[in-house]
Image (cartoon, rainbow, N blue to C red):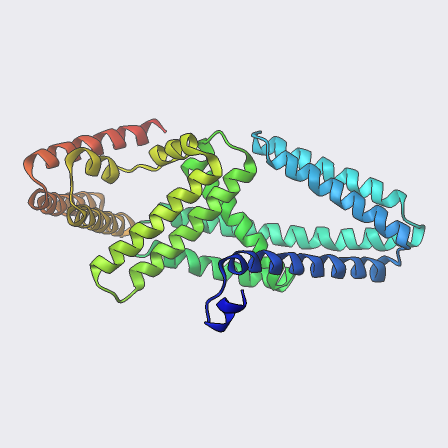
Length: 335
């Protein structure tokens, strides 16, 4: 280790264990601060403090076990509420009347905070859902704007750290509900972790697109990122579930690329054509034009896009592309 430090090389063992040691130290500091806060707030004796901490650990362990199970979301929420209620009943038994009074007031304040926070999160979920139905040139940028707007509102109620944790958890829940993650036979905890990976992956890919670097360099960075993402998912849920998740996420573009041997250039241009078609179609749909005029302009947009696709693909690829699109449209109608 000394030689490594002398020559400016961080030893591998130290590099691997330093973050773990830092995390452990941070958790220990947080635990000590939590103990001090409880004693200051309630005037706990040493024995009361130990009893309270034990009850907290039992509550958290039960919720963790519950989240490791694959059960309906409604049932999980109900059981979580029961676990928290049981914790409150047991805590009040170890408290003096004065401590109970302080505890009750704090719970009332927390309930008001929770109600205000939930109202903000409901508005956020509604806007997030609307955003998902729109075709945007830069959807990730719009999502981040929305995130910042509602996180700022939560900060006023909860403070910066709690607000960030709450809105990220809520985003992961929304991602789960609106993606193939919900169809995987995995625990709630694994669903949330997958959603978190998906959320972070989207941000990283967006940053790569914004980098002012050659196209080939961007492609290499994207490929590396996607491979790490794939490995992370496989490590978390296993190869079988990871393969299932990949199939559920496949789009018409992915299937076409596999079946028709599209080059990366063709695939990128095809996505751009279809994205532009969708944007123009949405503009027409939201305009104040008369129905006949809307229909005429939409047909013109489709004809133009179709002509571009024909120029991009060969005859066999074009045929398979329209077949895959027809299958996808049929699946959408069944939903």
